[in-house]
Amino acid sequence: MIGNIRRHAIRWFAVALIGAGLVSFPAGVAAKDTDVIRTGSCSGASDWKLKAKPDNGRLEVEFEVDQNVNNRTWSVKLKKNGNVFWQGQRTTHAPSGSFSVTKFTGNPAGTDTIVGRAVNPATGEVCQGSLTI
Image (cartoon, rainbow, N blue to C red; front, side, top):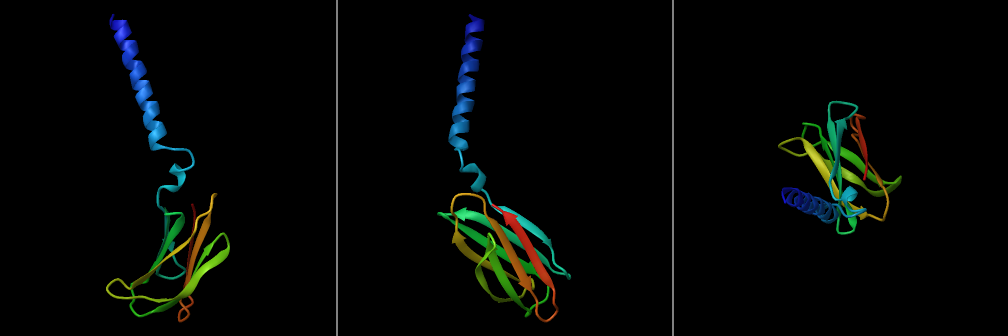
């Protein structure tokens, strides 16, 4: 009798684990359900952070540069798979001496490579990071 109870409990435990796996990790969804974040140093004293995450069929991309100096203008480009989807200028602000750009781009099926690049024209400093999502 104890053997039957043990086998029955093991079966239910296995079914519960399999069921939880099917509910928690549907095929093709789990890989894009989390933020991808990369950080690094620029060619000078600044640091960068690049983040991307799926959002309602699009990708939300955030690129941040922390220079620790206020009122410095940077030229910024965001690319997806080699194509520019946003470019413009941003100025560092108090209190941290940083700026960030948040933009959306399409998110078709498959893997995408995102690149954020910022250049400080006054100093020539370059910040560039990439990620794959």
